[in-house]
Image 1 (spheres, rainbow, N blue to C red):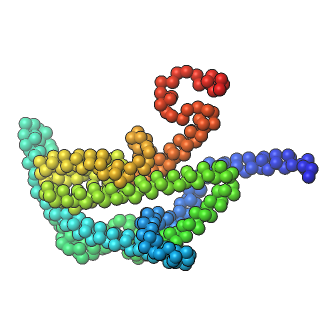
Image 2 (spheres, helix red, strand yellow; image 1 turned 135 degrees about the horizontal axis):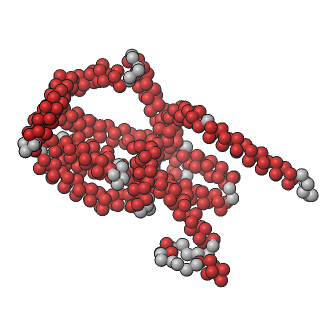
Image 3 (cartoon, rainbow, N blue to C red; image 1 turned 90 degrees about the vertical axis):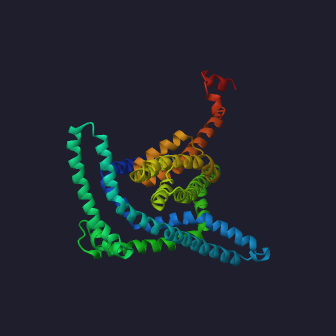
Length: 427
């Protein structure tokens, strides 16, 4: 068939149209950034249950796979030939994984929340004694400087009296029991936190919306777990329909590698932090540190953050213990150093392995970058997300070096001062 003489003109026209459309789109996005941001925020708010369900399904997927593998191994081979039996095992694994997650969450809350509540009440009760201790320490420290003492001590005494009166008259009476605490939060704390919201009905509506989102997220997670293989196959169809088979293989391989990095890091870090929190709780009770449940909870939660987590959690805990006993504070700091050495050198590598493949500098870089952009979530997810980008760039660099006939090993380029172009031209 003879090619059309207008084919080149049509291609040029389509290219010019795409360039102009892209320029107009860039102009609109640049000069209407606030409108676009508001639109994206609205879309994110509408799809929040979907995102929550995706996160829940992502966390439940390893549990689901282990349960499904166990159920499949316990089922005779002739029954596995029927797809309906496999479907039944898949649904059973989803139900059991949800039950496991609910039971685990309930046990953690049942063990931690009452102890944390008692620790907070004990801290409020002991606060007047801490004020006296700090006052005695200031007097002893400033006894050689009477002029400074005459200025600082009245200010400290006034602030301490006001704080003690607030704790004894407003806070402590409302912490006598869980019932009075909940009633106090409902009547006094929540209306102040809502700011412009003057009635409790708005708070009830927001709680109802949150409950609705959680319920939808649970349904979405079940649906995603049940249809994960179908969604995976459909995604592959789209990729291979757009790209060449070689490029499609590269995209699929990188997607699997990204999932391996992200799931391995998040699930491993959650398990690691849970173990560290339990160890901290047991050791704090053995060493008779004050507020053991509160201290262990802070250490376990902040341990989720790589690199900076141990320091973020240890500093407020050390200050709390310092108010009770400076000697115990020193012992606590030593205990935290030993615990983090155990976590960093033994427990963490055993659970996480080399799930990210990042050097220490890139771990620090990713935490600072994503933490500054997205806060606490960025500090937690920054390392695995950056590891995925790092893996893609590393593969592309190796592909380019292989295409140019150059070595891929980094050691080859250490101290390399010769021009590599001459070697490639000779070859």
